[in-house]
Image 1 (tube, rainbow, N blue to C red):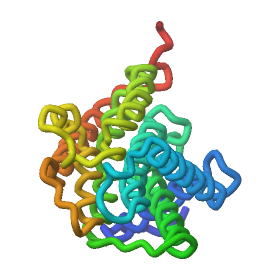
Image 2: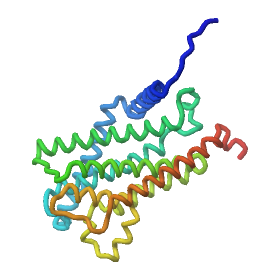
Image 3: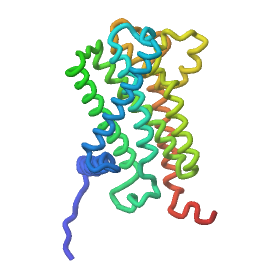
Image 4: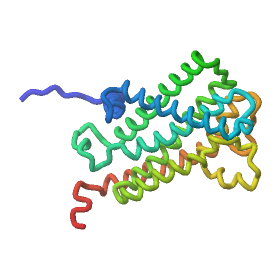
Length: 273
């Protein structure tokens, strides 16, 4: 009979959106693990295993001389942190809730919230993992000195952003060709084990080899992060503008494709096939 009329303003809508994104982010972090702490510890363990494996490989093969003059552990971490962040961000977006997901039956939920939650949960886990590993190395092993902390942090965020942008494109294609997207995601991650440039310095490559790597935005972000992290390294073959432009273009294309897919997908997509 009687009801109170509620007038939504821009502030209340923004608060409601932030609240939905927050709860969806917490759900993404805890998904697949007993708690958020378990998810964080698993990610830290994976990062430490990566660093230890590359440290042993460089030491056994005698490749430490090819690294940048300075802290060898920092050299490894600048590559591994950005590589894992980029790949995990892409995977989080591809694995997020699509338009035909049961979660979309809840009225406040939509694909934009799902994408934002997947992106923020990935960034949260990777940032905490990075700080925990850096703090542990700084306290237990030896002090870590970063020449330009702000520039290095921006390259970390840029690697995350480009991973999100590419992931949105794959997410938009996923309802049309799920197996193809899964294969592309897997191949892209394996190619970047080498093509990301985390195992070598771009300045030491001959000009004939640069063309095999400079297409990759992650290659640019890792090389630029080392330019900010080390006082005696100045990248000559890479730039931060290229991955930024690639990220913006992929994000715009992905959002448009996702909007088209959202309007055409349904639970009975393959019912007649």
